[in-house]
Amino acid sequence: MSPDTTTSPTTALLGIYKKPDILFVSGEGAWLVAEDGRRYLDFTSGIGVNALGHGAPEVLGAIREGLESGLVHTSNLFRTEPGERLAEELVAATFPSQVFFCNSGAESGEAAFKLARRWAGTIGGKAKHRIVAFRGSFHGRLFGTLAATDRPAYREPFEPLMPGVDFAEVGNLAGLKKLVTHDRTAAVIIEPIQGEGGIRVVPVEFLRELRALCDEREVALIFDEIQCGLGRSGRLFAHEYAGIRPDLLMIAKPLAGGLPMGALLAAPHVAAAIAAGEHGTTFGGGPLVAHVARVVLRTITAPGFLAGVLKRADRLDRSLREMASRSAVVKELRGVGLIRGVQVDGDAQAIVMKARDLGLLLVAAGPDVIRLLPPLNTPDELLVTGVERLEEALS
Image 1 (tube, one colour):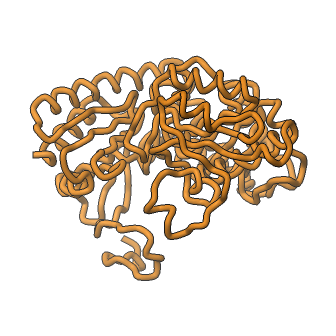
Image 2 (cartoon, helix red, strand yellow; image 1 turned 60 degrees about the vertical axis):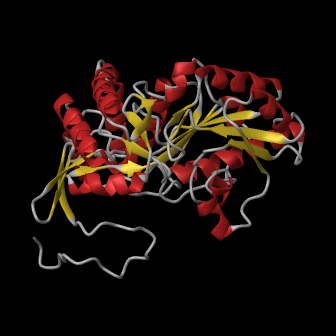
């Protein structure tokens, strides 16, 4: 332990987060290790960030390689190879598009709104600026993305937020058609799997209907795959289950293996609407994080990796169903791949705290849903162990 390590919480940090009195000092795979040596099975993955686990050799090796080049940051005034190659590889793995790099998911969302409005203005003028989001959504905590987030407790202290956002109900196509108009709507934004909203999987048929409606009314369709993308659902992106493409795709969390990075992929017709100087970032797509992200992307898209995720997801699913059959507390199981929700009859946060006492790290997704986000390469036996500890916490 270094001389400056302290075991008591500091008051120097702004009191935004309610952190437990545990100081983590190392991590390995699906485990986090506290200063007292106790090991915790991590089913949060840094809220979906550490897709390859803690201390992943691919990520650590890429960081070392990136540092050895001496290019950590150059700004976007200049070209660097890692960012350009990463953009090409993302496009090759997804759909014809152009890429804007930033530092977080919320920034990806802000860029999506600006680009959608810029494009909509070119075909419908300034009146075509409204954004349609959905009940249960979470898109970020900046003023634009917060305006499209359906969490009153997050919104109300900071109102007025960005105007021009309407909310629809997932699955209610008739209501959606009343909100999405050719002359006023710029974009519709949706998470194919709602994360903070309770791990709710949007039906693929509704996503297809949404795609058709946006095409009909010349509205940009934004998919927010910040949490459910990059392998978490068992596909590279969750919208692939519906067999459709967005006009704008928001990604972040696992992209750079734990380093801060987000990206927005824009289809050519939308990308063409924005000009040099109309948006920007100082750090986005820097050579170090882009080099690491290339390795992460190659790992997730390597032959057999996503098939392995689906196999592990099947094992997790069977364990959860067996647990639910024995528990009077479990009301519903939700999710696909390795993004799972357990709706409980009770306080989810209290169960999260009990699980932590038992050595399992979880995160809530609303007042009554426990979220499970294990690393995508978690061994089967640890997935079973995690469910066993969850069952103990539920009892």
